[in-house]
Image (cartoon, rainbow, N blue to C red; front, side, top):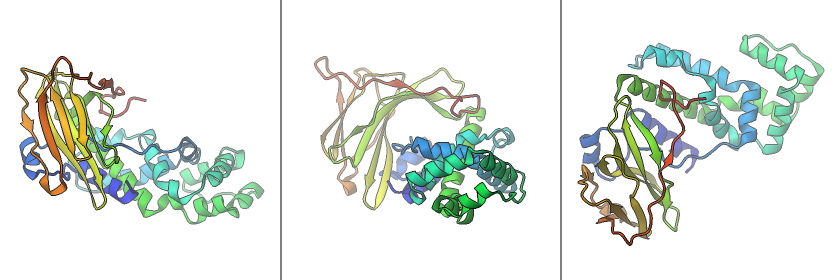
Length: 304
């Protein structure tokens, strides 16, 4: 998925709205759908963001903007935002604007004594002291992109960062209010042969609540519109959900016997999507394992 579609999806999910093939499902459940498969930033780009401490600089800017706006986020959520939560987002968003070779060159400079002094000056809001090393770096392609063109301040980066921050603040506020759906484990995405659609199941529960539910979600990246949809939800923890694409637009869901789903999504005829809800039989293939998700802290954020 290209960057603007990903950013739009993050903004949609982060604000509590989403694109779905059945509008009434949102009215019934009122829950943000799971994120689509994420694109992981390359380690070298993440290392550069850390060396530049760009996550710290940009997060401070976005935090000030959010604090000036009228939101209903918990104040402790805004106060406890930390740079490591947005490092990967910044690295991913700047990736198309700078080559791997330039990243290596830039990281080497920012990890040097001259580079560290430049970073400290930028953090303090001061003009950098000119040094031969700094002057040489500024004249390189990497230096021009990072220090003159300021590619980390491009709209694509700032939009992605803001979407990530708002998403984090929603997660934190919902967690503290006890309305956050925590994912405890999830299966791998089961994709169609053309890689356009994917489905998975996950075990979730409200923050602070012992009750569990099992949900099946669909994500399709069509040429002109991405679609996220909650296909079904079952009370309790069930790690035997079978997902099988009969063809590129027909999904079979094998559900445990004697469990009544709370909801079943109807077919999406406009996009040719069909869902068949079947009862699992003893001879069916084993379900994909439900892999435990990474632990979260008291704010519902990745614990690290």
